[in-house]
Image (cartoon, rainbow, N blue to C red; front, side):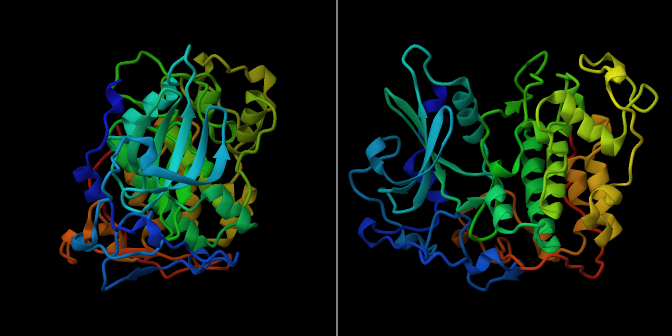
Length: 420
């Protein structure tokens, strides 16, 4: 298959930030205590630049002279990576923490089992073809692909945890400043893939990785689709039920970037509240009822064309009027109005009314973030080769606590990359 081509050492070297001899690899503290980054979040400028990769457990130097290649190990071969421990398992794949024998970096190995009669799962082919073209600080980086007779292995940068685990370790809702920075990074990632006409289609906390630097990265592109590939319709069986928008729940297969924006809005609420926004239990009908209880039951007057959707059966719905968000999700009442305003713009019933990722990044909600954050480069680079004035380096650190209010700042502006 065409997608099974491998990265060359030269291209991989430009994406890596350090080299650790295999016999000298060290690991972070294993005492069980929470690392400092888990509790404090602020943006801090460093005089010494750091690399973008999260795969370096030591935060090593970026000097090109220190980068060495292990003789005898090549990209695209299974013996170039050593599995350290199993991280998780799904229906089609297992994920392992590993180490590259080429350069000593920690990696995540996603091993997809292939069956002789079925071949490589189409979701794996789709994920590989899309990820090979995505290079962004808020999208997980695919380093290598290994194809053998029995399996297909994706070699990703190693990222320490995901948003679901992070919220579990911080019950009751995250610090409002942490939420702001996580949402900013989520929207940056969405703006990037949407500008390349790619829909993620499976946004949920488990698919948002969080590094020890506080960076958030979109992951798991198994359900992603590129709208540049001709297709009459998409499937309505996408996105985990809790994060699926009402138009798709009603059977619509004609959707675009608004699909991901609804999921992002649900995650926004979940980070603030510490609980899912619309926690349906059994089926699509119950999930719709959860949404109607907040946004009201739509009609042709409020949503032109809704009656034509396959699953629209108003006689089965309990009639509800829209409710103020702050009366439903109490945390919003404790925060400035601009927080609720952005949530409202993301959780619109009509998909065409939902805000785009680009416009959301310019919302007043983010005006209190330090100005240098607005100038972070989208593309992953080998920053040691960039002048510091052009490639600023930041660390995202997490604050403890629950409620945090900052002084108002000025409206921010970003590149004019609109939603399509």
